[in-house]
Image (cartoon, rainbow, N blue to C red; front, side, top):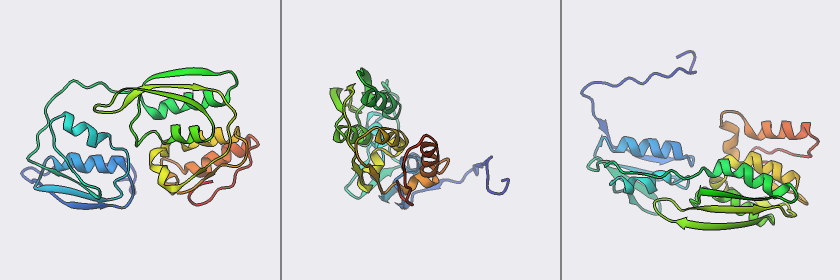
Length: 229
């Protein structure tokens, strides 16, 4: 409606059953992947996803805890409507994207020493942590459980940081943390280069240009590209 803008209306059709599909993901999106897997629970047959599957895997980890089997291969994920959800008690870990701001602050503010407890250490979410370590940050990680999500505590102390090169294969694991990574880069010795992040152009805003505009306003030297800066 309203010339292709919200609000969006979704109308169910009584008596019409969803049909399983095979879908090729062109962009690594955990939201699209999750939506299709949930729909696959209620679609006749087996739904299979291929393509860019390397996004956050919270859904793939959670389904087995709820009694749902997924057929996860190196290049595909399949789900059958024969699977049924079973209620369980679930502990929700702290969000790595929220923790990233505290990690960044502790890394660049002199004499900082903080511990962030009970944070998800899911490998698809720890890209920012790994890049910080590569830049020279003092970070200690204590894993306290592995199931269904790796969970633990993170201690960060301030240190002298150096610039780094973030490549396209790393982007899915830190896509939401790139704006705060840009802040860290301004306090690191040398140049930081971020590539392969063209998805930021089509978020709620063009995050590449927005970040660059605001950093330039504070005196930062930043050059933008179609896929990064």
